[in-house]
Length: 600
Image 1 (spheres, rainbow, N blue to C red):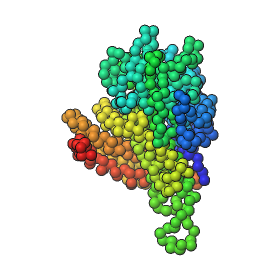
Image 2: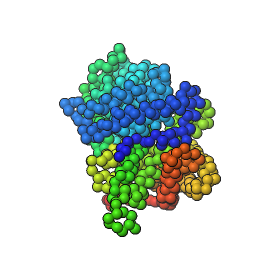
Image 3: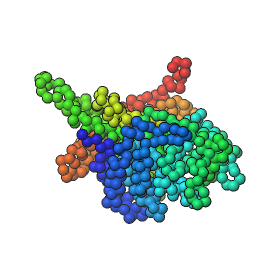
């Protein structure tokens, strides 16, 4: 049985080239030295490395999760071997300038590589992607001296990194952060406080760990405006650039998780001995804005991780369903006739097609966002850059939260395909579900993403981002309307987008009247609504590309026809649910606001 968990290459080629036109990114001067041959070579390298060094220890790092032993964190040795191979191949510097030793690749291509590594082993990949995110933040906000000292080793894979936001008493409420930073008189600072849920917070997998920590200066105002950002190394770095003595960063505990067990998650204490050295990044009070550079990147990464795990579960149970024989068709009465592969049963096909519709639809939307990252950063036209940024603001919480929610559902369906076997540890689908269950929680829980989407993103700049999405949808729908098999779907999508705009106007008016609690109480339902519309747009684009392609083989014909079938399923089975969302949202239902806690 084919147990390759990675997104198939033909799927990536379809998404990157047929849909996103990734090769055209080479018209930007930054990528002019590249072509599709370069991109393909990098994808081939990523796939080979993911299968040879990441996938083999995915189960081992789950079963032998990191342990806190004699003040040290122990992880299975294969994790370090994988990260060393990742660094040796140059993957930490995929996005970096060639002058820094980087590959200078588009974000769109880098995200495809990320998806491959996440599908192989999301936990080990987490160490690497956190380090890249820290390096990207430093490039945007740190001084040249700080970049030379901290970013360069991150790009070389010698250092790893973390983001330290949450605290035990505050959780996601960053306004309540208490960690303090006292000026030391020499331009440096001394930190004191505690941080919780820090992935990659303590280990010996690299020469050093660069912690990015949100903290308050002594005269800082209350709330998020009082937060500044600090570099806090695990080991202090001397004038020669080499790590030296241990900084005052103490491991207070290791959190034992349901899934993604292979990446250590920690409770850290800073400055218990009064000697935690730190460097401030940029201006005081800009910490949260700076950290969002990393958080927004991480949120797209969370979405892609969720999609990759959803795809891994789908691919495994699809192969299983082709081989597992059980039962007969309802009209086959002869008990002596041979049992059928379970993929022949209608309900198993339902479970499989539902997964395909969710994970491939989400994947298409993620690459839509990735291309906007490259346009925003490199297009010479100011209007195109601005519009790409607006659409990216709108899509980021959807990609994070909708993908996490719906791809966990896909993993649940994968377990169902295997039945009792799926519920055992003998098969990987239960681990994919457990690993994916973290994604609706971390990097901003889904409820927070919903509040961000409805409370900020769809209303900003007088609804400019939502108007842009509607314009994109209208363009796709008009093109699809000329294809007989897609005309009804085009009309349904335009209708759903119109309803989304109407509902948004109703909720915006409610907030403008001062009734934000009622409007935002149903934010999660709004995210479901907006996510389904956005993914329906993704599916209509995929179906258009599939209908216009000229297959060169029977296998390619089956692949393209499968796209049309999944699009049809999403429009028949999923998109109609948004009308229920619309009616509830328009009613400004007060049940959650008026609910007394004593009734629960």
